[in-house]
Image: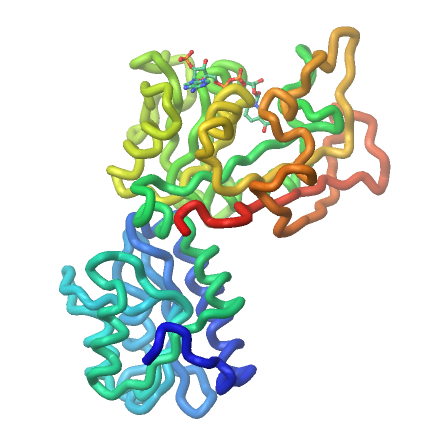
Amino acid sequence: MTDKPPLTHLTKSDRDFMSLALHLGRRGLGRVAPNPAVGCVITQQGKIIGRGWTQPGGRPHAETEALSQAGPEAEGAKVYVTLEPCAHQGKTGPCAEALIKAGVSEVHIALKDPDVRVAGRGIEMLEAAGVGVTLYDDDINILATELNTGFLTLQHLKRPMVTLKIATDQNGMMRTPPGHSRQLTGTYAQRRMHLMRAEHDVILVGRGTLEADNPSLNCRLPGLESQSPVPAIATSQTTVLDDYVLSGHPDLMLLNDKSPQNMLEALGQKGFTRVLLEGGPRLAEAFLHDNCVDEIVHFQSPYAFEDTSWPPEQSDLQLMGIENMSSQTKYSLSRVEIWPTDIANTVAVKEDAKDNVFFYSRVKPHFE
Ligand SMILES: NC(=O)c1ccc[n+]([C@@H]2O[C@H](COP(=O)([O-])OP(=O)(O)OC[C@H]3O[C@@H](n4cnc5c(N)ncnc54)[C@H](OP(=O)(O)O)[C@@H]3O)[C@@H](O)[C@H]2O)c1
């Protein structure tokens, strides 16, 4: 098989089953580090007979889950998997071997695994056993790369990926004037933000945010509380006063190195693949300056907070150098979400007020 086979033989069903596998894989984000979040669908004559995704902690793998659902029906089946099946002996045998043993006839793979223990060997094992392999190199491959940006960043750069989340008002301020509520966006946008927390391994803020907000940094969506990321604080201090909610957290990490790159390498050594950077503006500026941000998610409130001495001359977006995202070339807008807002207790609400959420990704992944 060549690296880039013509994919003209793929049917709409093939792409639909692979899209489903990508959706299933997403369920593992924030729970499977240092492993990738993989999804797998097994079909027999166009009917789904097995579905699986990487389980919390990274095992069992998606293929194992899907194969155990399919049982003996897997003989002669088609498999759609979002990452090349593993070829190395871990706590259990390699997934490529399990697929061969189950007697599947075809394996569709959205993305090759760069892990040195796999790196094409999963595909070789399958082909050597007479299993037909199709490696995608189109939009599906791009979606699989996006799903696994954290895992791929750790493999290539020895650091986790960083999603910078910022919320601002219409003046580009992440902070609110003294005496005002700190909340910039409404309930729906807040819930969306909590879903992002669930999909990351670590949540990082600077000491300024710890002291200003006394945050708990957990995921408070019903049913997803156990998917809260591990909290981390960037600070030159070595302890956190008992006054803060986070002081009692058993896994709290204090990152004492000022360099964003070093902070991330230390997190990479612990096997984390996805970091949510929740600010504030000074820490965010340092990460942007050192080219350590892979995605930016900007929650924009429809309101402008104003006071006698507010906003300051330089907005927080200006401080971070991202006041005009449309004119810069490193990131491009990949998605926009619009949520109704209800911060009625602090600001006069217009009936049709909306929070906008802008998702920006790197134009070129860092590791290409
Ligand atoms: N709207 C939003 O999205 C959002 C999100 C978070 C926070 N906020 C708001 O932002 C405000 C706090 O922001 P802030 O800028 O004052 O504080 P910050 O960025 O949260 O924290 C700054 C602190 O981070 C530590 N740090 C470690 N490495 C650093 C580096 N390379 N560069 C800069 N700082 C580094 C330093 O702690 P040491 O001094 O201990 O070394 C520094 O004092 C609060 O008002 C909070 O409510 C808003």
